[in-house]
Image 1 (cartoon, helix red, strand yellow):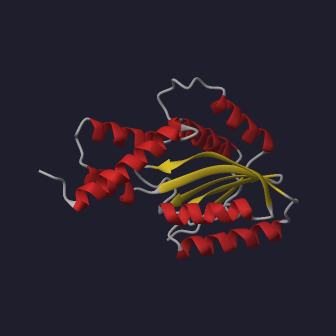
Image 2: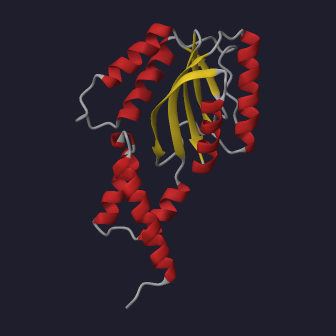
Image 3: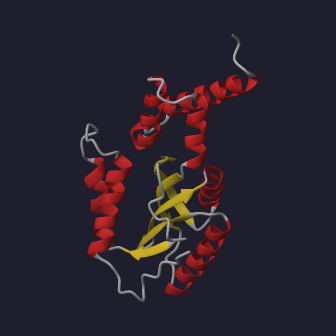
Length: 203
């Protein structure tokens, strides 16, 4: 029996997704998608179920960059207010860590919206040396209550967080993106600013 046009389209999309996953520069950073692919290969889920799970799961980008010039507190707050307004309109959430002109940011939400915003950031003249640490689908949002949380972290803590993760063995059970985020959050918590400086905007 020939597959329906829906089946053919679903299979085509899943094949393209699997090929993209295999060609990813950092495949270990897409742990959830690898698990989903393995389930599909074991025939535990169908093409349509794979696509539904991907469409329903949030997409994230974790990146780091440098500001082209140091920002004043007023400029940082203005940038944050604009980011929160944009994120509310586009159903995005995340975390921004700032330290002496260095940024580490997590963006999460619908894939098209995340990628569109990240493309804007990469073109933004206020950023330079924009490096993608990880991106991909995940089972849930990590910062679902924050349109954009802001944290200030000592520069040395950010460096240590990256070194902690990047020097670890790839064989670790935890995905690299999760280990990096955990290390960054630990640094963030150690250097937690007072409540007046940390003002997450809740939905």
